[in-house]
Length: 338
Image (cartoon, rainbow, N blue to C red):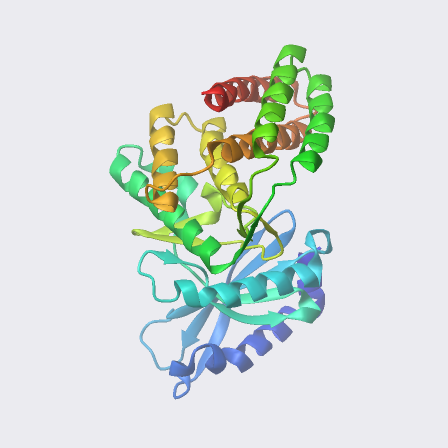
């Protein structure tokens, strides 16, 4: 795991390396003694994050800057995943560097032997949490979702590729296998057939259509967007995927729907947030509704399997999750048909 790799290398060694590079990261500190101090650690399924405070010896304030060191586990791609993320951050940073409302963590370094990326620490809390924390401040949430759409549009414009076809046949094959799993998990045959028919119908509309292509974030969700005032900061930029831009849109809109899995957010609020996100991205221009629906349905099936797989031995939780996804599928089928 990344955590073991980090400790095998030695925390003191990492600290020494960061201290040695500090004035490269922050040239403004060249005249003053500075050092790093471990502030906190966050462990995820496939990575570990280590946050350091930059301490200025001759300052009344103990905390002036911060560093984040992300270590990728072998299961997440290890060194190559770290290299891709650092390259994506480095190439994308100029497009966001001077924006007042749209940002990414500033890339600082890449340690190949540790499968690690160093960035400047960013402030903020996940956008997902704000749906639970400030439900009364609807206008702020709508504005932030508009900014999320603007962020994604800028990222896709920065990484744009020539238009191309969506790999619908490959996705239909995966869907068939996933629907078999859903049936075994207790989903009704009729619902699974509806999903198959609707996705197949959407695929026919997309088979001969060239769609906008770009580097895709890969996990553009409400919990991977940090909020600092009116600023949106996207984290966990993958950097390895090139595909239709609608993948990121579908992922984001599904993540809005999934807020209701853990919090009773109003559907009207989530729909307004979705519309604001799309408005922020397209700014009134036409978008391919079939592509969004196609990728949302396929993505939601995969998410249902992933979440239910973690609840395999929790029959009551699994029953509740299955009911949630049954309703979500039917709602999305109605939207796709509309």
